[in-house]
View: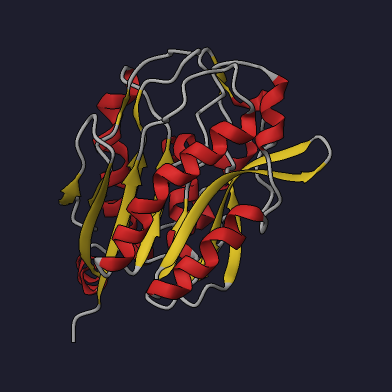
Length: 288
């Protein structure tokens, strides 16, 4: 019997583009905007749902305003506590990307994973942190220190890779070696050079590692930063590099696809990349 997992991705624009408003108010508005999409996913039988990078707020990293430190929360913490009952209600695992506060002055770009019974399974902390115009992330985040964990949900073993991580094949390979069957990449990516890569890199990861990927990008523009248009195009891709479903460039929406995890096995039996890899020859990679 085929192993079919129904999965969903939510791409969403920020409803409050007003920096004069309190951080907590902006976050509440974004959270509440997501709720109908989350409930819709549950009603449609989605089994694993992933939200976008720092889902409950704007992508504030184009600036360096320390007031956004107030957006950070414990993980597990308020967002997990609010979404856990919804996960249990619909028997739907949820990947919840938030801004994490570990302690005073120590913050991470993090994704929590909630299982279908509402249980918190753990978290991934973004490992690769950019520092360039429009993406001053080192001002806000420390590099992750939890490695590349995978999470055994009720439906599949999943991994998480966040936005800029996707430019690094090493972590994508480690997620596969650690047992990921589906890897989710919540992102905040604007039109420009990266748009060319959006549907190039992640299908390549899926093919090279024999797993499915769910790739999420927000939509719209965000003031006062106005660094460009978040172009959506959230999509699912299978281990053959086939796009299974794709969102629009500018619409708030839930993207849903049925992922046949038996394809992972078929592809890995055809392309024996894991059998033929040569870790004994890769020492130079980590010495440079």
